[in-house]
Each structure stands twice: as structure tokens, then as C-alpha cells.
Amino acid sequence: MRDVLHLGPLAADPLEAAADLHARLLPAIEATLTGGADPLTLVFLPAPREHRAWRLALVQGLARRFAPSRVNAVEGDQPEAVAAAIEWLAGAQAMTGQLLPLEAVGADGTDGAGVLYPTA
Figure 1 (cartoon, rainbow, N blue to C red):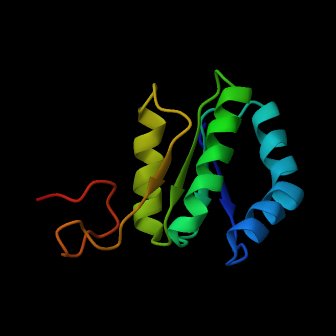
Figure 2 (tube, rainbow, N blue to C red):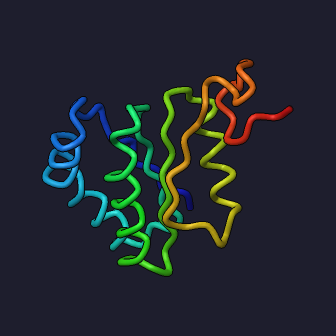
């Protein structure tokens, strides 16, 4: 079974976004994991880099607390890219506690079509 929770939209300010998620959404995330979700993928909408630290800390903390269940997150707003990442993560048995940005533009400046790792 693959469990997916879409989180957002959240506030533009990183501190407000983190506080909102912890107050309003964290209980549902923890209940999902307590109920046996494995793997669980959290989906965040893209946000400025100032949000990365609190998002990563959340995912890593959940992965430690609920091990051996796997918890990962992706950042993206393209449904096809998010679906592909969820599928990939489901097969990555050793991966947990990760936050993966899904790029709309590849590292080389071309359209990355939302892939995890742009191809050359």
C-alpha cells in the first residue's frame, strides 16, 4: 500500500508555515503512520528555499520516530512528476527521511518535465 498526504497550501513565511503544519496537520500525519502507513509520501507545493530546513527536519524526525516505516517527501506541483516520484519512492526500499524537490526546469536550463534527476 502507498499512502500519500498532500500538505498545503501553507503560509509564505517559513515560520508561519511550519507552525501551521505542526498545529493543524501533524496529528493527521502521525495518525496515518500509527495506523501502519508504509511507505508514506508527503507532498509539499514548491516554496522558496527558506522552507527547506523545516520541511527536511519534519521528514527526518518522522522517519526516526516511526521506523521501520518509511517516510519521505517531495516538493512539486506537476501531477505527473509527483506520481512518478511516489512510484519511484515505493520501490526504493532503503530510502527514508528524504525531501526531494521535483524540478520543472532541468539543471541544464531545458525543460526537466518535473523529473527527479534531469537527464542529459
